[in-house]
Image (cartoon, rainbow, N blue to C red; front, side):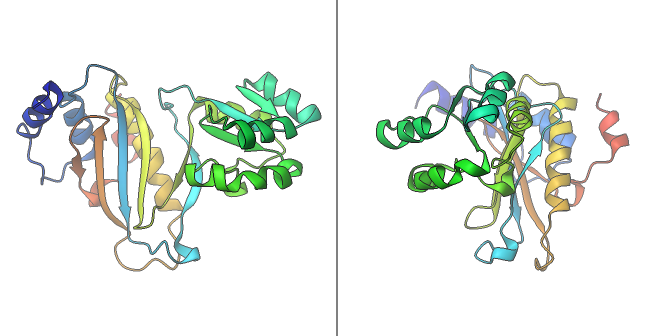
Length: 241
């Protein structure tokens, strides 16, 4: 067994894997259970009571995490003229129009985490659907990645705006910080994420909406959170500051 495997096995023995924790307890626990030698990402997984096979229950959007993700994201912008210049000034990592489309299509260029496009470029960018789509990188108006305000979009995505969408069984996965973040900062992002998911609850969703909530570090074990305790008040959050 590798050293990592031994550390993970030891971590799993140090807590009750079936216990449902309050959010603050869960964050404290995963930080104490970290097994990697690098600054791990804190991941949030939420199982929703939705049927993603139905269009009216498929969730997709973006939200800004108040404490950021702790990760610098590379942003590519498909734009021309003034919009291209605006994107460069806002800090986009790569900007182009037909030339960038060709670079992705013909050279396999994929060195970016977010793709943003102006509406007038979507005819060309649409040709990249088979390449960008499977990677979750296709610009989409629902996620704010097809926009005329590219400068604002670049700034937001580089500073902590993240995309979310339900997978085929109704799960949503989001990064909500780094293990090195303060407990308050992680909980602040946790609150923003759950508030957003509750805000966009589909009217067609029946039964229990928040089915399960799990937080974990990149290489650490998952810690369950009580679905009935996920809505933090501002007062509760302030107590962790």
